[in-house]
Image 1 (cartoon, rainbow, N blue to C red):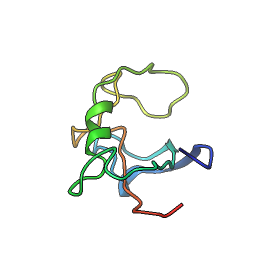
Image 2: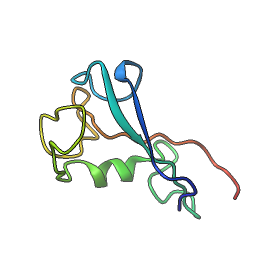
Image 3: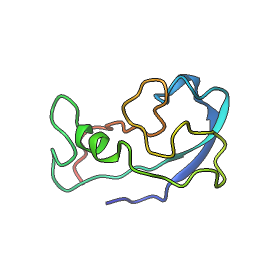
Length: 95
C-alpha cells in the first residue's frame, strides 16, 4: 500500500546507493510503500532481499525522458557499479 504519490527528485547521486557508473545530477524517483505483514519482501537480515531478487534484470524501456544512460535496459539491483534501482527499509510503523 502507499499513501503518497512517487516523487521525482533531481540531485547528485554521489551520496546514494546508485552504482558508481552514474555521476553528477540526475532525476530519480522515490516511492514509499508499506505492507500489512512483516517479512513479505525479505527477512530480518535484509528486509528488501526478495524485492531485489524480483526486480533484478527485469527489462525496462530506455531513452524515454531519463537523465542517465543505462548500460543495460533492465532494472539492476545487484551490480555495485551499475545499480539503478535500490530499496531501503524505513522500519516498522504501526498503521
